[in-house]
Image 1: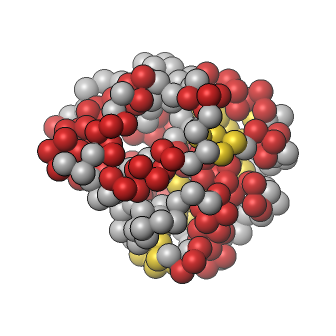
Image 2 (image 1 turned 180 degrees about the vertical axis):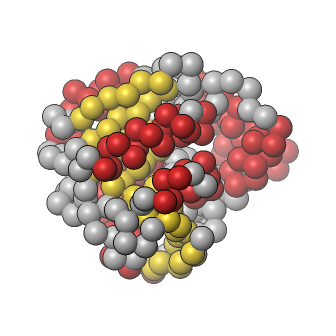
Length: 272
């Protein structure tokens, strides 16, 4: 493992970790809401590292990255963060893998930079809009009902909410070890950051329609956080998309079914 500090938009310090083959095809993993680069542990510790350059960033406000007070509303900031990682680490035609809110960040990137510099995109249980009725239509009640607790500054309520959230991200009951591990990096995101993420109003339908590079849409059939209808909507917007639905899997295909996820990602990237 090699760790980097990358200067993102407005100089925000972003923590980035990488492993794998230095000159292999690069894959940049972008995690979801209140998560961190550690979400991708089952990819970083797999045989994907024998073929590819695996890079994972902590989004602004998350994990080990800097947590500015007010720097989350502008799509350009999120896009520039991704571009900063690509440029600083000299990632040539990277495949962007975005989980959940990471899909919105990829959409922010597409709105600012298009897909010319990318090799491809993998949207995983992803959203691409926020703060509108259309956006809310594909968000499950299992997430919506937790929002007050996500925003709470009372430690006990906040942690209890995050524990429920982690459990709902996985279709089967998480092991005690997995729950503790995932909960640990979820609590590193301050409630004010989660509030800021909820508060954005943005839509990227036109940016997705403009995508020309190959796209793989990955979604759990039992996802109760971002409903499978989101995958269908993305497939209808993106002419180059192919869709892979995972039965008996919830919001975290890369964690719940890592063997299948890693095999499909390997096939996707190798075929570009």
